[in-house]
Amino acid sequence: MTAEQKRNALEVTPVQNGHIKSNGAHTVLNGTSSAAPTCSQPPAAAATSAAAPPAAEDDSLEECTLWVAFVTYLAYFVLVAVGYVKEFLFPVHQKEKDRQGYTPLYLSFESFYIRNVYRRMSACFNNPLASCPGGQIDIQLRETPDYGFSYSRTGEVRRCINFGSYNYLGFAENSGPCTDTAERLLRRDGVAPCSSRMHLGSQQCQDDLEALVAEYLGVEDAVTFSMGFATNALNIPTLVGRGSLVISDQLNHASLILGLRLSGATIDVFKHNDMKDLERKLRRAIVDGHPRTHRPWKKILIVVEGIYSMEGSICKLPEIIALKKKYKAYLYLDEAHSIGALGPTGRGVCEYYGCDTRDIDVLMGTFTKSFGAIGGYMAGSRRLIAHVRRHSHSMFYASGLPPPVAGQISAVLCELLGRGGAGVGRARIRRLTDNTRYFRKRLSQMGFILYGDDDSPVVPLLIFLPAKACAFWSELMKHNVATVIVGFPATPILKVRCRFCVSAAHNKEVLDKILDLIDKIGDDLEIKYSSRPRTNHPIEYGRC
Image (tube, rainbow, N blue to C red; front, side, top):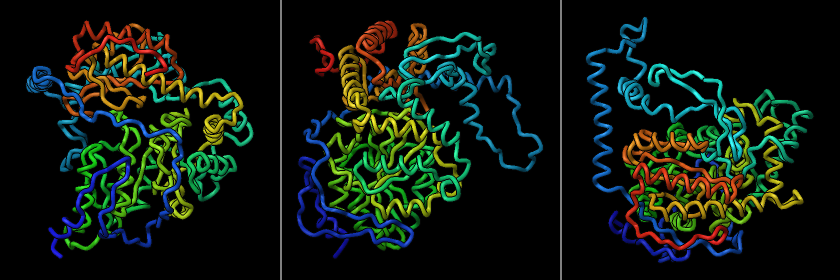
């Protein structure tokens, strides 16, 4: 059979209600290597949520006008041109000492960009904090005597409403039952294990936490780590290696990208949330095999996130699962931002769509967002987790979760499972959903360009021009509102944005105050770029 005949045999079939209709036999790939876990593939079970899957969102991302794009490019051009002229007239002497004959350690353009572009916007970044990142936050004010080259603290502290932290459920607090649990474990088990998990660093509180995580997610087993970034970067190499193919979303987090590079696997990238492109990549991988030998891949792994932290978009999990089953690939789901923030009980994007967690081969998440703590987890079948425990670099070379942190996470999980007695966890999840929908609907009604899905608590507001982004941030700070500005190179050059993070720690009065302020600043800076029709219908809180 020729390659073209193979492609025709794997004809694309439409996705209906999250399932792909089978049109006959297709090539079964993914032979298992000795160094990889063989995740079991149980039959699909009943959905974890009785709620119907959400209606499909409009996938089209609104772009800026040609005039705004031109002015944005012109602004960067002027900044770079002025920088080159300045450094031609006044050369910067920052050569490394005693390194004759060595290749420069630092890239010259990166240093140039920091000196001449980033420095002018640096007041928006890296502001020191003086409190826990709850619904309100204390920010230490700074001043610069040399136009951003250096900063010094003024000693003044400003109390601000916090719209910049990933405190989705509002558990980042220094009082309450979760804090009391953390303090009790601190007194009982100490500050830290001071050893790796595979040596002397395993404690009962960590084992209890892992059992609780597995119960909450509805999987067989789970393992925890003391750093969320390292959960991806140091554990993905235990799952894939040379001879494996990873098909990764275009906007995956840096920790995923680093882990994939360290693994030595071949990496292919599909367009963000584009299921047609993903299926095209899968079909080509099965038909063509390895690009040099054309032998079948040892395994194919699809890597996606639940909520993408820069775009605020939610992955199309039902369609991804259908493609994964059709082409017999493995699925790695990073729920760093979706766990705790999506679904009626906060179980993440699987519950949000009513998918069975057993259809996900590797579940990953972090405790740094909804749980108000540090660290991360991997969950799945017992065989998978046993493999990770035996081969993970984090298990051998990194310290385990500190007991107070394990206590904080366990207490939050108990609240989400309804064991707290007062129903605080479920109430916060409902408040987060109401806050998110209300905040997004109001901003869209004002005429701002927003990215992401309606239920995503990450709300990117597109500003485009870097100067206006700085002015927007400054005006919010003047009115005691703290948020985050994200620009190039973290985003494309035309996609400078203000990223709001909605929290259950906010109430409607706070949201209305912030929305009125954003509306006024948007008019003053003329950043209401949306060309979509606006409505004047009142938006009712809790009924969006």
